[in-house]
Structures are given as structure tokens and as C-alpha cells.
Image 1: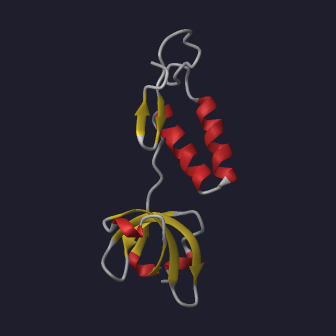
Image 2: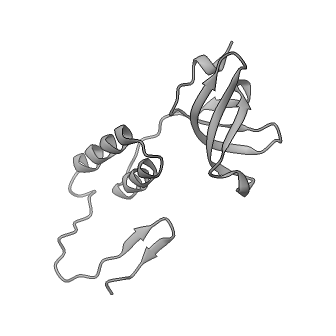
Image 3: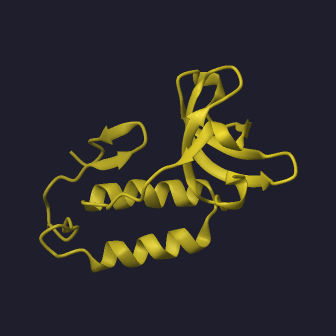
Length: 129
């Protein structure tokens, strides 16, 4: 069975490259004729492959199951990823999801004079302390 027909652009996959590198990423394109999938690598045991597109045989990857987002911090991380990948539809979906989180799960940004920390992909920063 040809898996490239099952996988769609944007699906998250994990697998290996022809060099045996373990990768996690999302499908950028599929080529049913050649049986290959173009995967944008976001995590790999070979750091130089991160951020690049790997062309792998469709039998070497498997779809990753959907996971449920549990916290506002996770939603914000995914929003950053949607912005980085310029995925407008996913960004809008995540913003709506962030707004629908229960107030107890959301962090209140109206804390008066309390110190706040900014979180980015490099960690946290105590800018306002």
C-alpha cells in the first residue's frame, strides 16, 4: 500500500532517513509516483538536519497521533510554531483554542504591578523585574 496517498501536507510524521537518522516533522509534499515524502524536520538526532527538508521513502515514516493540548503554555508554543511555518489556518485555530481555555488555565496578564516574565524559544527572561 502506498502511504503517500494516506499522508497529507501538514501531517506530523516520525521516521528515519536513508542515512538512518531519526526524524520528527511535518509533510511538506508527497510524490505518489516515486513513493516519497518531503518532510520538514523539526527534531532529529543529527542536529544539522533540523530546519531542512528530508526526502524519505513513504514506508520509512509513520503518522503521529493527535495529542491534546493541556495548557496555555503549550498553545503559545504551538502559536509560535504556526507563525514560524506561516500556517495561517493553524494559527487562527490555535488563537481560538487559546481564547477558549478556562480562565483558571489561562494566565492573567492584568496583574497590576507584579513582575512578569517573557517566555520565548530560548527560555524565560526577567525583563520587567
